[in-house]
Image (tube, rainbow, N blue to C red; front, side, top):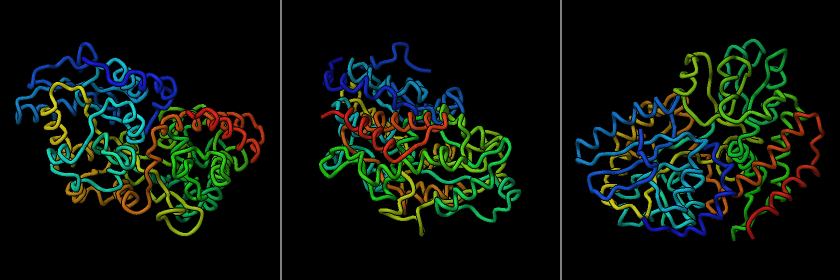
Length: 437
């Protein structure tokens, strides 16, 4: 297989490697060696409780595609901890799959490698047209002004989940609507071995997601109109300080959360150790951890004041998974048929129900299941108050640099070091200096 802008992709490998903590049967070689129009290789991200669960679900669905088209799909489900590095290796070697899942926040960065197929009007027409998809989801598929590098597959946003029993025991009547209320409720919930909330302090992507939302609420975008980093603006500094203060100043988060990286905060919530958690998944995720629907409630993520909306009232990034095609696939027609199948109304409805996400496909969203509980909260947020992370080529480096800066601030807060505005600005200055010029 021919190489695709190997130098451009190689420059991303070291800077992107730490960001693969998102927004998780296969081929023997790990790459696509398929010259037959009757075979495709597909790398799926791990969406369910385990890789084994995903493989079982997807194998059954892919059999339907094979029956319809005669095209066999060689499936590999890849954990999130490995996915980005696997993709980057494929972009440099040219030996990737035909079709793959990517975190939607990586779209512009992977687009810059030149390894992914452009989704121009003709490509979109082959899968039924661009207008089948929700605008907010399409907005997270590549750099502005260019043809998208991917197609939306699963959509998510953050919501606030709260433990009903812990709230009742603490005398809290309703979920917080503002961050002041969030902190006040967190202090009421924090006693003994129970804490107000939990987070993943060593998860760089999660750090970025929360800082981005708080930044929007403080009027900061982290990049200017030309795509240059503005990490040290007053709004960005205020956002990061507010976030880290939940542990350092407000003391509603256990210090050990500074080392959390992959789902530990969800486990704490499911086990009744924390009263609230900000999470980008719907009901099936919590129920897979042993919770019953009546154990928890769901509400919009708080804002500084007022109600969620656009601009400074943004309360989530547009989260989710996109589906991309490697430009050097030898079975482009089959790849397009496969993407069309995976984003069909029937499959989009089934798979998003299974994974606890919301379909980015408009007609699939009509299913009543996506108007209830966590799914309903996610859908409402995506339609009204979620904003895409910056779609710039250096977005993934942003996740690494600023995500790591926040990780280090969490470690300082856990060590009882005072987190001053000057300390936050110094950390963000260092992060900005690490960005490509």
